[in-house]
Length: 112
Image (cartoon, rainbow, N blue to C red):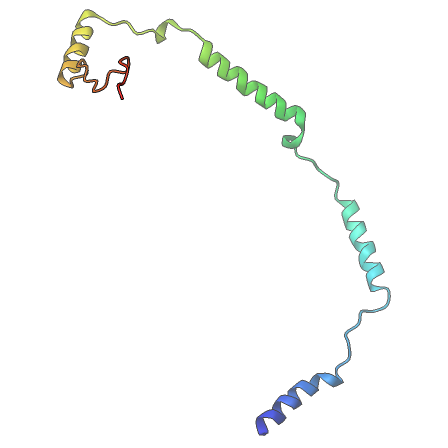
């Protein structure tokens, strides 16, 4: 019984409280202050989001890639000496890379 009385007292303690209220014209002054602060800061847009700069960056990357891929240089060609060929052949023989170990002949017709 004592427990129920304490619960009722606690719940009824909020009955005498009044609702919190804002001073007069609070929302009007708040709205005016927000508009004033918003207008004081100029809107800055980033250069990255402008399509002109983004397209220029994409074109620059594509041109750079084209120069790298299609640029021919005499330095890039590999000249193989006869001693190198012998070395390659000996490596291929060591690792049995020259062997043709096909288990299946793909040109043959299968018989059911």
